[in-house]
Structure formats: structure tokens, C-alpha cells
Length: 279
Image (cartoon, rainbow, N blue to C red; front, top):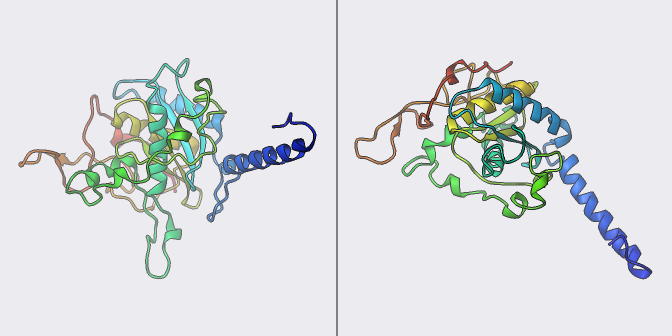
């Protein structure tokens, strides 16, 4: 469009500038009603470093390489990264799953600003994707949630594959959507216990994904949710994964005593000793 001549050049340039402005607004300064923006969240380099460190520390599950995604409070993808020597060193399908998990944890977590007019959560409520597993099973209190907010496939699979997991990943700047209901997604809380978005991690067992996401959040310093409400029963880890599922005597999906349980995984370990969240 920038190369059109004569009368069309001015119009084409205007359209191109308008498009670039819209794209830039989404990726760099999508302030939204809550004043949140990717510019206030860790960038690609910070996510990459935190993900590499967390993956090296956590050796439960299959000990695989990982994908990670950060979204802001409006669900805009801010950064996508992977560990390993190239984008094929981990499960390719986990790229979009990591974005789904980030979107889910952000979409269903709150801070104290939710409390007004006699309604809401006075201390907020942090729900990890691991906390949603049992609730969405048949007969669960949130059955069907996993079918809401579908992934934007145009955004998920757009662009050149060579850019996947780089600072120019085509998902960056888009609202990816998606709901994922097993471990690996955690809301991000800044100083003051303010929710600012979420991180999603995928590439291993769902239990290992949860542990690695936890370590990524801790590495990023966005785990200021001591005192924020949760369902884990652990005040130091309010949105931690819960292993309270027992066999269902009638068959089918096991029963979670608290309604927010998650199955154990291959080589499950360490969730109870994850770093406590910060004040």
C-alpha cells in the first residue's frame, strides 16, 4: 500500500498508518477500562529468562522443554517464549495451550477491586487453571466452562512459524481467548495485590506445568497475593494445585472433596514446597 502512486498513494498511506496504529495500540498500550497494559508487564526477554530458570529448576513430570505466555488484564498476549534450542524442542501444540492457560487464569481471577456495593471478593480470588479441573467435570459446579471463550484460531495460527516463540510472535497484541482447565495457568499480582494479567505454561504433565508456572511467576516477582482469597486451603499458596480426588464409587470421574481438585500426574512432586507467595 505504501507504493501506490498518484491519487491512491495518500489514501493507501492513511489506511496503512491507521492499521499500524491499531496494532500498536493493542500490543503496546491496550489500556482498557482497568488501565492495564502490556507495557507494564514483563517483556519477551524477561519471560524467556524466567521460563528457562523455572524449567531448569523443576524436574518433575517428564522433564520436558516448555512454552510460556503472558497476557494482560484485558487478555492481550504480551509475550510468548519457549525453552530449548529451537521451537521444535518442545511440543508444538503447547504454544497455543500456554496462551489458553494464561487467558483462563486471568479471566477467572480477581483482586480486591471486585468488592463494591456489598458484592464481590473483599480480598480478591485467585484461581489457577489447576483449580478448575474438577468443577468443569460432568456434575461439577462449572460444567461447560471449558467450552466458553473459544480460542481465536486466526490469531493463534497466524503468521510465519519462524516467529513463534520470539519477540515477534504473531499472537502478541491479540486477544487469544481460550479456556484450559488443567494445571499451568496462574494470575499475576503486582505490589498491592493488584491483578495485572496472567502467565500460562505448557509442555509437560499438567502437574509439572503448574509447578513451572508457579516458579515463573515467582521469578518475575508478580506473586504478591499473600492474603488474596483462594481455594487451596494454604494461605501461603492460595491458588496452588489441590490433590484431593478419590475414586467415584459409581465410576467415571473421581470425586474432589473440595470441588476444586486436580488429578495426580506421572512423577508428581513438589507442589507443597513451592515458594510461598509474597505480601
